[in-house]
Image (tube, rainbow, N blue to C red; front, side):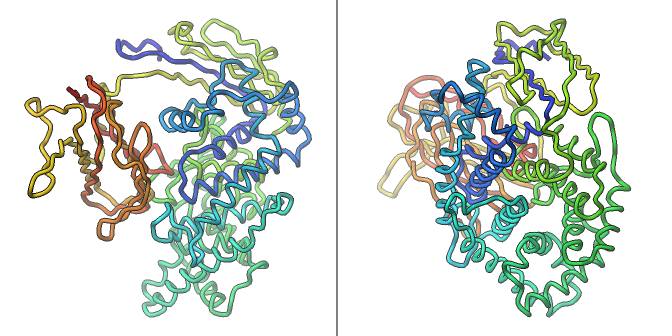
Length: 579
């Protein structure tokens, strides 16, 4: 691991973390939800969700509250990142290491500050107001402001409120009335599904499609609120038809859809069919001592129902509700925690579902026992003196001058019952222009042009050694991206050289015919977000001003699924010279 021969590679930090109470991984993930920087509807909802679950954790478990009180007893401590919001957002976007602290004590206090009730109340009201402001007049939510109402995002928010309802989260304690927002959102998803149902009634052969994707997700979200918002006669007719078709196709669905179908059928009084689905799922499970229970087919894709963490979370919910299979639930939680890589699960959406599954189903792991020995290289780690008060969580870091090749070998032994978790991760820096283009079905073509005015309008001249960039020039970035498949919830980040400043600093939604995207200009990159991209070629353009002379790395362009970041591609790194 640390033997890499690249001379440009620069070690940053080696970190080992372990907890004998694995549920604390879920608790330590809540600050990630509450501080994520983008302002799309789903992540504003995640901020509200993170705060509400934090409040629920604190008020429902005296042991956890005592731990945070102990961490905070010497007074509040804020790092420079917490005081400087703009700086924090830059670092949060460009590295995953915002919460690295100079000392264990500071780290504990930073986390404890986030769990103070007064701060949570302020954050909750702010997040709820922002979410309310994003709700459109028809009750739906666009992914980003200015876009069309997105049925999936709206349904996700409704089901998220359903999750919180099931956990008995108390909104009234913080003087927040969520009912008008939920009622309008349910009205929107009712109308959208009813509209689709009426179209399908005209063509019975295609009606089975209503049980897939959006229709199934709708039934899941709606099942949390049947008593609060009963279905009309029309909706009951639609529900009956959807459930009949769901029963007919229940074994032909994807893994996540099967889990959702089992939950839906169980809640709509079709328990026998639901058990058939869960038992068929269990037959294909893989079980191992290290990874717990999981499914080989649970692989990521570019659509919302191809998300491994959310799928595993729904499977936990299905096994708990439908067959009361506690043993399997506990084994499935093992896999979920093993997938909490480095600092957090891979997206806000995955984190909300994982926290819900871990804290709401199966046995409580708060009191897991200790009895662990850890050796890193030839060094034994003193867990007793390095463990955080009450949590059983230990985190030890080595700076670059302390990192040695033999530290890549980690030995862990546990003599007591129960489970324990640990991770070792290596952080390093590499020159951006050393990065090579990934070989995927996504192709990038990025060019820079100097823009000049003429009597006939603006003229673009491609930058070459004979036509260099000069300080004061306006430079047009043309980004051409070809994709070989349809994609949902795409995030494109185009980094720029530090010698450039953006001309347009206002974020907003833009349309090119039927294709729409949200453009967000940040200090280190320009971001584009599109909730749906068809197979084809897309061109993005924006202007920069050359402010500083020098030779700069112009960074890379990356493209990934916002909710499955492992599905990604990037361009090669290039350099630019400003005279």
